[in-house]
Length: 513
Image 1 (cartoon, helix red, strand yellow):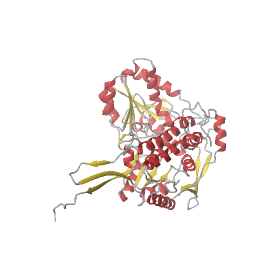
Image 2 (cartoon, helix red, strand yellow):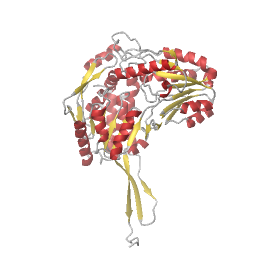
Image 3 (cartoon, helix red, strand yellow):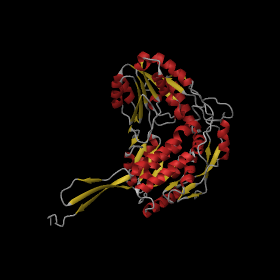
């Protein structure tokens, strides 16, 4: 596998696809192995329903083997006791390997979950490398503390790795979500057992092939499989010291229950129903900024709407509503849907038949609730050999915030739009949700921007932008959108525990006895 070659044509991507042989085994203790049961399941390309690979179906036995390998590696200190400088050097090499194999990793993510390959190549895979680089650079620049004490005592506050960390990652950003967790966990000195979503194991397994020689055996292990068979045993294991999960809120509650049995810490990045608020001043000028606002509205189609922070509720001030929505509908209709391997494709296929059926049910529900369909509203018809693909038309509903299509996470290219009178009503509607992961505010008025940004109950409020995920900025949810934070240096604290080493250097007793 060579350096990035900047593929641009369908034929070039298809040629590369023909050369790839996706891994299908588990990665345990530095080796690729079959599942103990010998069972496999099909990894399906959602763009055309072809079988990408037959993947090993791990279960509790395999999880136990992986946890044992991770624990043995941790106890030996082959990684956990390495200096921050040495861990840094390894993780920087890992980041370089991701960049050097960008095309292959992007292609596997595209074929595994249906996203446009150009998006994966331009954003997802470079982002994965960036996260490893950022945590690598951060780990040797974070210092311990000395608490103030009286003469004769020294209170050292130090942070140590937890041990074995379990990570369960979703299918919408297969490589990215894995690296979000792995980069911080490894930088902190932990060993890792990772369970990818059963829909999208390919890119993570390729990553294991690339980095297998960089890390000591057992430090990173990957067990593919289904939630009940592999995810639950991992989250329930008495030998892990933390579980990190990204996925839907209902599953997050189960993960929390499993972890509570062993009193281990959790990080949960869960669902969302993010408001995207457009104030009347955005239409004061027909300029680059307003064009940016239109792009911000259309962001609900990014990654087929399969983003936890998808701006799936649009709030538009009533004084501009009709003119704004006329342009917003036109912009949405211009979003090109098609083959994920074609450069001009902006939106690909939904990740699975099950997900497509879920979205279809919400399209029907919205219509039954009385929501007006401004565009889309149906299964998309895509030709050129993709007739069996999981395609949904980008859909705009108009209605009220009390409707289920405004309140429930759809996880597809569907946005529900409503009006607001003034700033107070906009804030009220924006916060009228069980979730609080992301939000967008669009205005030319700095005071409104700050007030809304502080007032919206969400872990990340994008102001005059949307869907930016820098490694150095904290990301996570309010309310039922999660617990803890991903990215930022504070994430390292989620993967470490605090020790107070209290030393007395006085020879005199305390005098109690």
